[in-house]
Each structure stands twice: as structure tokens, then as C-alpha cells.
Amino acid sequence: MPLDPVRVSDTRAWLAMASNDLRGAQIDLDADPPLFEDALFHCQQAVEKALKAFLTWHDVPFRKTHNLEEIGYQCEQVDPTLKQLVDTAVPLTEYAWKFRYPGEPGKVESQEVEEVLGIARDVYEAVLGALPNEVRPNDQQ
Image 1 (cartoon, rainbow, N blue to C red):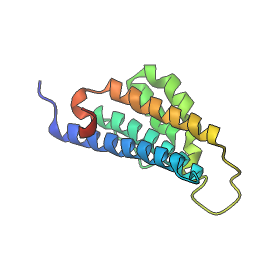
Image 2: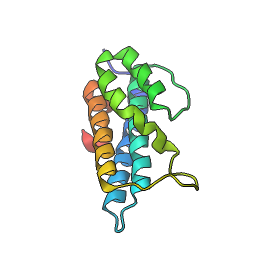
Image 3: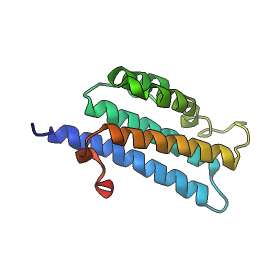
Image 4: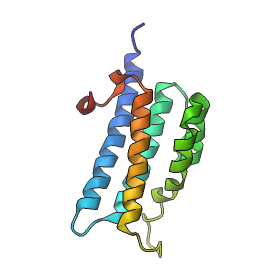
């Protein structure tokens, strides 16, 4: 049975955006000086977009939210094997807003960013592995 070209395109678009966020996080980490807070934001965004790609592929509607617990729960309803990975990623939700506004958010260390980037990459790879190859972004086929 042929794949729905609209669903393939929409899913691929979410995955491409997630991949770009992972790339942005790495660029921020490699900058001199590093942009740790911005890297954390991109990590959260990569997880969010990867999970939304998964939901898009499975035709599960989702609301506009950065809440990884909510989005992740919807993914777990489709594939319960994602639960542990989602649970690991849920704390990244705060990076969607924590450093985006003035205030005293606290100091970020390189180790924290490395760990969070690892989580974001794991989520992205798990989603890629759970979807057909046809939805991979063109640079990853």
C-alpha cells in the first residue's frame, strides 16, 4: 500500500526541523564562548519536534504546546515502548522558556548541556527508528 504523500511530507518537515535544532544546539555548544542557554533551548525544541513528527505520522492531533509530558504521553499511547525515553526527556520542557526572558535563571554548566543534548539526540534517533525510512529528512536518507 503506497504511503500518503501528505503525511510523509508533514512528518519529514517536523523531523527536518528537529534535526536543525540538534545542529543549532551543537553549534551553540561549539561557539567561543559557548551559548549554553541557547543550546538547551534548541535541545528542548528538537525533542518537541521529533515527538510531534511521531504523532503526525500516526495521525494523532496535538495542540500547540511545549509541554513534553503532554506530547510524550500522546506518543506513549501509540507506542508504549517510548515511555522510558519520554520520562527522561520531560525535564527538558523548562528549557522552552527558562532562558528566553530576563531574570535570574541560574548558571548553566557545559556538562548539563552535553547531557541534555544526548537526551535530545536519543529521542530523535528513537523516533527515526520508529518511522519508515521514507519520512527521513532528505539529508538523512
